[in-house]
Length: 281
Image 1 (tube, rainbow, N blue to C red):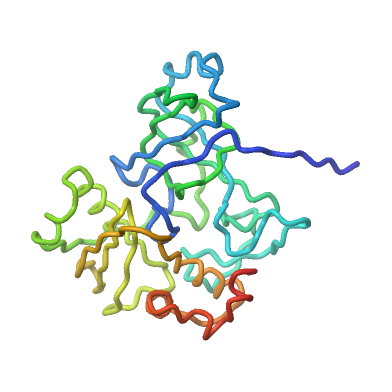
Image 2 (image 1 turned 90 degrees about the horizontal axis):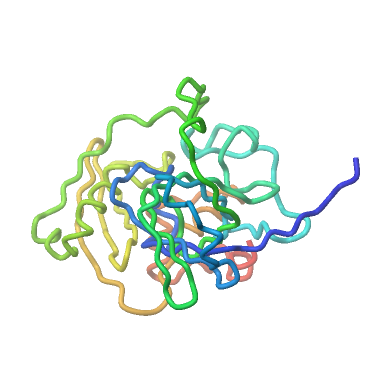
């Protein structure tokens, strides 16, 4: 059969509080109240294109994994038939088509979100959504209505069975008060989902993630995450230290999440990987 190429172009981009992958919920709709926006490109901000969308409560977003450490847009895309799902500790290999790994021949993802509303801002239409699991700036390639028949409750989940009990979260009152009131419950829910990688959950280690201008530092015990500091991001690019972890995993280098966080804070990643190798990973 003749091979056919199909050019995709973004119709919109996501605006969310996640400026790095670490901390993003592993699946959509896990964290109630987690809001984001789908900002349409001007070309696709025609009101007629959205006529009737308010009749649906949820939408499918087809998006691109735009923050892979390996550039999946190059021709031919660099992909492997076997991947190591973090849920399985990063040691067990599964076929890429039996996983939701972002490292795919066509680096596309699918996310179901709740539609909160729609508004026009200048020349652009903006969809307000809840329950997204998407990085800020993620390109959206299509939007489709979610309908009840899309759900198959009896579907087998393979290794992607629901995680165990949520983590307990100890967030000292004085630190919690530093968080804008409307964002407190969301941050508590994000922590309860335990943002750490399944293969790097050693008790006592310190971690951190960034959400909506806050840098939340915490340490972990077997059953609890304990917040130790709240920092405010003011200017400049936010460190995407989880990219270093991903690069390490792809190239089978042993770097723990805690080590990566420390290295990124101290601008020391080139000491291990070299700037060129990291940037071009």
